[in-house]
Image (cartoon, rainbow, N blue to C red; front, side, top):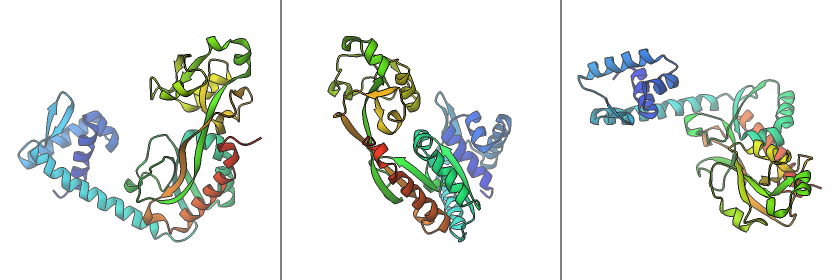
Length: 289
């Protein structure tokens, strides 16, 4: 196969399982992907994908081509990192991935300050709780909350995010202990930490996927939460239920790919972010008075 676009089609359809998903990955329309797949099948004289109830599945021929596609894709990613590594000055772009809550409550002003100090560097800030892949060049620098980040990445381990129990002051005044209700995430329908909480028999009133929205719901008197101190202590309406009950969650890391670690602007941003987060340690660990 001579055309890299053909390999990209195989990768996109294998990962997306549908023509529509593949089209989105390739920024093409549905009919174009369909025509290119038909042309590819004709080129090889055999089907590369079978259509199953779960979507498009690679045939034996397709599996062989997939191996080549993945190798070529990895070469392309390596070349991209090599290109970025040979931009030695403090100019250019940096793709930074951070969890939305950390961006909002810990780094929003600091990111603005970085841009003001280094206007020749453009920050492209991606806010997501999804783990981006630095090997696939999805970001240059990441702030990751994890106890076990990928071992080949390099950077700085800081300290754990601390959690505690919170509710609004009015909620605690207006409700008896027997009437308390939890607001939890949707990730775990019956979180085990409730059993170790001060209110193990309280019902779950609502499950909210978004971390920040859970804190806002508690601040508006809709229930009690196990909240992140750096968010909850920033909300005037929220009150910690038991100052002695705090729990380490996961560590904060500032990470980059080994191929990028010596790029001056990458080193500069990582040093800046590490210093900014360390300055917020008391807020993060819940000891800020």
